[in-house]
Length: 154
Image (tube, rainbow, N blue to C red; front, side):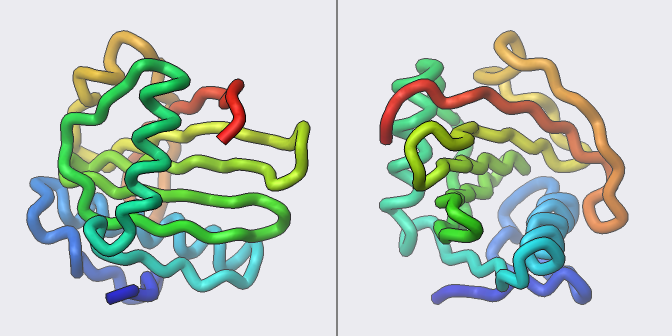
């Protein structure tokens, strides 16, 4: 069942099995606040098993673009369109969040972003391939992030 993420009263609902559930909930709330503030969009997530198309699309892009397979179990996912962009998000049990930004128009921005919840280690599948920058968040503590540009068509 879809769940609108509340960024004022942060909840670990749906993320309880993560060893960094509170930090992951803060990261998810940080994303919800961003989309609410910038676009007036209500950030809604579903259990991963109810959003398998999104989970599969993100996994396919990671595999085809960078030969990456995420070892952690997906907990939640969402897909939506805003301001000419299709956005896909998958939140993993390890505390990892992956988003795919894909411009609907040809030649637009297309990238994959990785965000690590406060307190989690860099996943081994990403450690040697990406450098992570740090940013502070009132909701999520310290977020480490990285990205790559998508070259293919999906």
